[in-house]
Image (cartoon, rainbow, N blue to C red; front, side, top):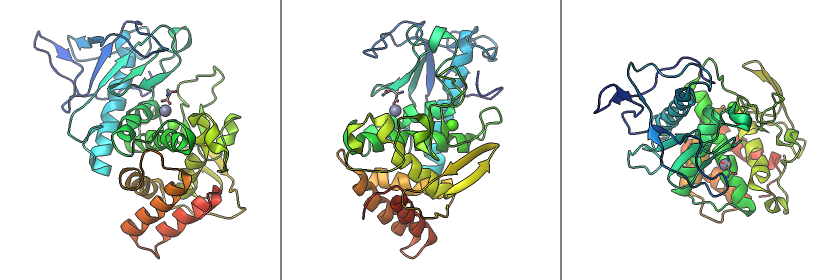
Length: 324
Ligand code: ASN
Ligand code: ZN
Ligand code: CA
C-alpha cells in the first residue's frame, strides 16, 4: 500500500503454496478486524497464505496488501538491527516476530504488546497504520523493553518514544524505498489526520502543536509522544545540523534552544551512538541528563574524546537545553 512493489521473504507452506514467513521467522497474520483496541488483546490471527507467491494489489481491498507492508517493515527492521547495529532481533537471539494486521475495527493506531506488533486499518478501515517508520517504531519498543527497559512515564517515557521514532527513521534510511523515501517525519505515509500532515516532525517537534523542542524540568509530565520531542530534535540536529535544509524533497528548519549553530555528523553515526547509549548506558528510570551523559560517553568510546562526533553529540544536547 505504501512501499510499492517489493520483494518479501516467504517460504513453501506445508499444505502447498506459500506462507508469509521469512528466513528469520518474521511472519504476518490476519486478525480479521477482531481484537480490542483498548486492551490490545485479540486472536493470533491466520498466517497469510498464497498459491503463487504474488501478494496484494496495492490497496486495502486485498487483505494481503497491508500484510506486505507489515512483513516488509519487519524484515527491514530485523535486517537493520542485525546488519548495522549487530543486534539479532528483538530478543537478540535470532528469533523473528509476529505482525498482526487488520487488528480491530477502524483502529487508527499500531502497538507493540511485549510479544508482537499489531496494526489497525485506520479510520473507516481505509488507511492501515503501517509504514516503514511505523513498523520500525513498534518493533523498537520491543528492543527497548529488552535492553534499557525505559518506563513509559516521566523523562524515561519520552526517551522510550523518541528511541522508537529514531529507529523507525533509521529503518527508512536503511530500506531506501523509492515509494516511502527516507525523511525526518514520522507517519507521513499514513495520513492519520486526513490532511496529509505527518504525525511528528523531528527537526522541530513543536510543529505538531504539542511536542516540545527543548528539555525543561516539567517535560516529564507530558504524554511520552510529546516528551519525546527534545530527543527527536537531538537526533535531527546531531544528524543534519541546525538551520534550513532540503533532503529528498522535504524542507526542514531546525532551531536550537540556545541560539547555537550545530554541525551534523550524519544519521548513521547518530544512530550508532544512540544505540550504544540505549543498550549500555540507560536503565528503566533514566532521565534526559542520563541520556546526555550516556551519549557523550558512547561517542567517546566509539570515536574518541576530541572527535567531531563527540563534539556534535554534546553540542546537540546543549541545543535541546539538557544541562551538563
Ligand atoms: N502507536 C503508539 C506507540 O507505539 C501506541 C501507544 O500509544 N503506545 O507509541
Ligand atoms: Zn511508541
Ligand atoms: Ca518517516
